[in-house]
Length: 156
Image 1 (cartoon, rainbow, N blue to C red):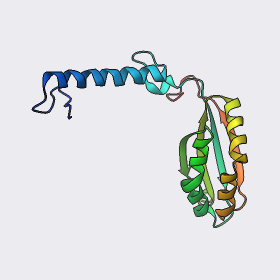
Image 2 (image 1 turned 30 degrees about the vertical axis):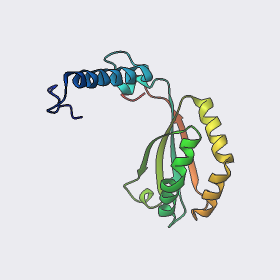
Image 3 (image 1 turned 90 degrees about the horizontal axis):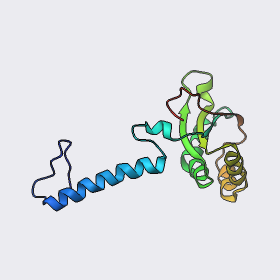
Image 4 (image 1 turned 120 degrees about the vertical axis):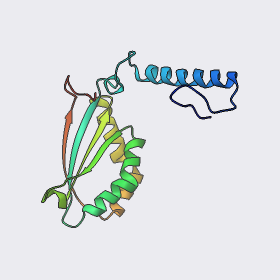
């Protein structure tokens, strides 16, 4: 069924079909706000509330950055999700020398305790251990900073 922005439904739809479509749209939007805990009119980004973020920077050995990106693309994100981490952003630095060996990313957690539990479970996962060993990346230097959004941040 196709709903146009002006409220008309695709030709040939009965009135009951139109009412069902309208009710479904209202229910979907209402459920979205309910699930996110948002008040009416509050932007969804503000509805996330009190999450903790982690900014991580991985520095790979010379010539290993492409292997590191492949490991994240093919394995790591799935293991993070499996262990309760929210994948937010993955990025490549633009300027040398960091662009030659550095991966940056951001994860989100409900709180610091959840972050610790997620990392402990992730590190103990035999599937992750195998993927890490088979990736050919080797050791990486890891820098990690936990942070919370400032009161004026559009994303919370």
